Image (cartoon, one colour):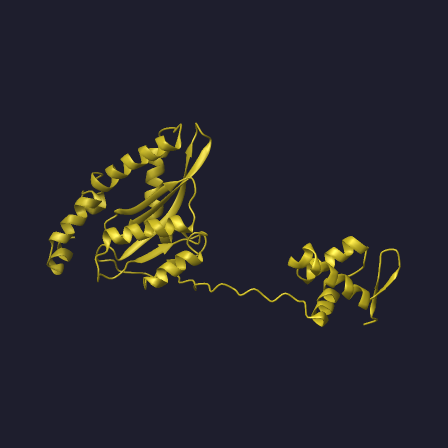
Length: 262
């Protein structure tokens, strides 16, 4: 370590002078910089040949290295496992798709939550933005509507979208003592029920008509969802709608009789 550096014109600059320059930078607007950007500032201002390694060493000697930011605690990824689903509210799948209002040249988001057993879409959000807070709010409303006090929470399964890997969503699941499974990348078959529903939604609604405004699209979506949940016949639900099938299941108090029936 020779104790000096050079400028691009060949002028020798002592480490003591460089330290003074570093301290001067920290007295000004550059106080927000770490050692890498401080090195760049000296290169820009004084034409100094000065790399980040030496910047780190001198900043360490001056005790002006920025303290490392505390990393937010992340929630470990839990991969999905095969589950035997015997009733409603045991496994929910959640995903986001896009819609488009041609008259306003705007996309919008559709977040849907489906119950794997009875195919009921237990929660849905549509809007011009869909961030973690909208996901948590929609999920919370669905839980309030479907889960009675004291009942076990469903397992929720999603992909790895930013809304689902967010700290807010992870904290929400943890606070509810609820299992959140995230499927591996490029494996939509592990979220097949919600993927299938969104493909049906695209085929039956969004591909059949153009929407001039977001409000028009939202109204059409609400009407379709009322039909889907309450009146649309499903061949794998004994030719019932999700709502009717769910009521039919609840009337069968004898579990063994139910298994013989289905």
